[in-house]
Image (cartoon, rainbow, N blue to C red):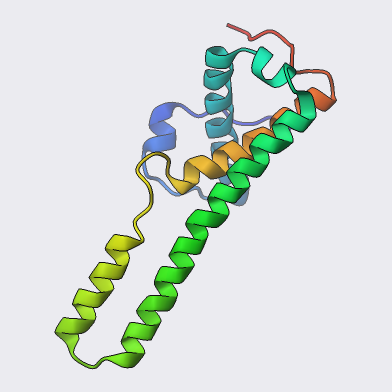
Length: 140
């Protein structure tokens, strides 16, 4: 199966994919671009130093980060529901909800989507290491 290559403009144009397969192609293209860029920065040694167990630990760190961020969102939604049940004053409702949303803002360091991309790429790295492909040269 051939994966369609997308330019940066196509990835960022805001157009929704028209099919499941097109959505997969776009995500694959984003993941590939990110992984090649990071591989150029880090080289293969950081993964080879600890092998598959090291990648699993990194993957575990990313999963914990995702759970923490999602937990914040869930707690915020629960608090908003409690506020809506407890108060009929629209002004107080809006003020309380605004406070909850402000307090639950995502961290500035890395959006949750970046964490998802890292999780996917660590899975790919594990496959490459297990197949002995991690040391293959970059094309350009």
